[in-house]
Structures are given as structure tokens and as C-alpha cells.
Figure: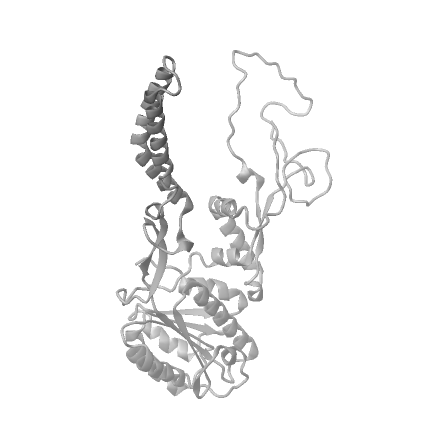
Length: 422
């Protein structure tokens, strides 16, 4: 059996269909490889691709071949190393398997693993495959502002750019055959009569000339049928189909007070960078409100949210009050799904934490689909955590998670924003 392996690079996206089919077939292996890659790479490398190795045994396919047929008796030679029941050791490294580790060996054979390179988009698609904003519902499905263009057969009128040549020529051919069919039958009869008449009469006979005249008239009628007519033209029909859209707004609240050292701020920033990347990739119509706070909260743009060096004391309630005001001013018209995520070290002014819990429970949670709080501290939970903890049992749309360092960002992010069944 001859096997040909094409190792040429795909050019001009010629094998895009085969690539997508391959990714669907080995989806589980690719997901495991992406999970392993995420565990071993830093967040700064999230936006890059990945090389995925698929074991050769997973690529094996069943094959049909001709059997020998008949009844065969075969004698196998013995060996001087093993007896019945002995366990055979695995070949040493270097004896096949494609790992490239170990010393050289004169035993064993194998096949290299298949290396499949994921692009940046494919890597992020796999990573975000099982993530979504929880309980995202279409609160105003009837409000439609978007349409998508979809093919809907053919139509008799349209613009020249939409002419379907194949369908038009097919219609023209059918029309010509239909119109010429009566003439063609009569033409064949007259031609037969002319041939029979010429066997007994001369060419200048009046009957012969009459038949020739009739034949010429019929041929002229057939040739007068237009090759193509405006009636034959067919145009590709495209219709606008309503495309429902869901509007969502995400509040990102980050503590930048003096109790948040640079490591904690870096962890919080990276969490929101990952969250923002997820939101902008997953939802086309979503607004993100950035709020950073110390003793005073401010709504800022993305650049200032991640890179401003302003700092100070800690009054978390200022951020919640600002979120409440923005929420009631812009997004409580019934057309928005509201979500919130707050990152802090939990070290709040002692008298302010109970007020934060009241603000969250009475003025924010009743109006949001989901609110997540992450506390970034390597030690015991702080006072803000203890106050928020009183809401976990009573509020189903509130969740809390603890982050000690950078390695915890991915598991916490997936836990907070994984898909939930309705």
C-alpha cells in the first residue's frame, strides 16, 4: 500500500474546509492541549497561538484490504528470550514513539506525533468555547436593529450585478426549444416529403419549389426566435432576515487604593484584561463601564483604567454608589442586561464595609443579572469579604472567589463566567 503525506503549507486558504473538519474531529485532543498550554503560559501570552501535538495512535483509521482466503497453517519460529507468560518490557527511549527523549536503542519502533498549529483566533476560540456571561437572556427580543442578508432563490428582476448567468441561459434554452418545437416537427415532415418528391420529379417542378419555399419559411421562423430575452433573465434573490441582538453592559470595578500593592494591582489588571478580551470577542453589542476607586471613585476609559498611577485610601462604597448612579441613569430602561465584576484586596475602611453590603443588596443586585466579586489577597479574607459573604446564600445572582496569585486567575475566571444551563 502506498501512502502519500502532503506536508506542503496551505496557501491562500485552500484547505480551510479540511482544517475545520480536522479540528471538529479531534476537538477533545485539541481542548486538552489548549488546557495544558493555558496552565503553563503567562497571561501576556494568552493572545498567541499554540502548537498542538496529537498522538499518532489517535490518527489511526480503519482500513479495508483483501484477506488471503482459504485455510492456512502457519508455523512461527520460537525465540531464546521469552517463555509463555513472560512480560515484555517497553522499548527504551529512542526506540520510537516520537518523544525524542532518552538514549539511543537498537530496539523498538514507532511514529512521530502529529503537530497541529493553532492560530491566535483558533486558540482563543477553543479557550472561550465553554465560557459565556451567565444567564444572558434576551430581555427585549422584539427590539431588532440588525438584519442579515440571506440567499432566497431567484427572481425575475434585479440589478445587473446579481444576474445568474447559468440559470438565465438554462431558461433561454428551454424557451427556444419550446417555441421552435412545432416548427421543427413540421420542418422534418416537409423535408421528408421533399426528399421523396425529388426522386421522381425534377428540381424545377412547381411542387418541389413550393416545398422548398415552405421549408425556408419555417427555418426563418426558427431563426427569428431570439437567443435570449428579458423574460429569460434570472437574478440572485437576497432578502433581509431580522437578526435579534442582545444588549449587555459590564461594570468593571477595581480597587487601586494604597493597600493594593503593585502585585495585587497587577493581578487585578490582568483579570480585567482577560475579562475585557472575553467580552469584546464574545458579544458584539456590549458596553463596558470602567470604574477605579480609592477614597473617590471615577469612571475612566480603558487606558486610564489599566495604566493610571493615581492612588489613595480605601472607601469601596464610593465605587458602588457610582455604579448605582450610572446604572439608574443609563441602563434601567428594560433594554440592557447588566453585569458587574469587582476586584479588591478586601482591606476596606471598617465602618464602610457594612454600607457596601447594603448598597450591593438593595440598590445593585435587584437590577443586575450577575455580580462577581474577587478578593486578591494571599492571607485570610478581609472585612469586605466577611460582609459580602452574608449575601451568598440569599442572592443567587452574586458570586465570590478568592485569588492568591497569578496562577489562580484562570480557574477563577472560568468558574465565575462558565456557561450555565437555563
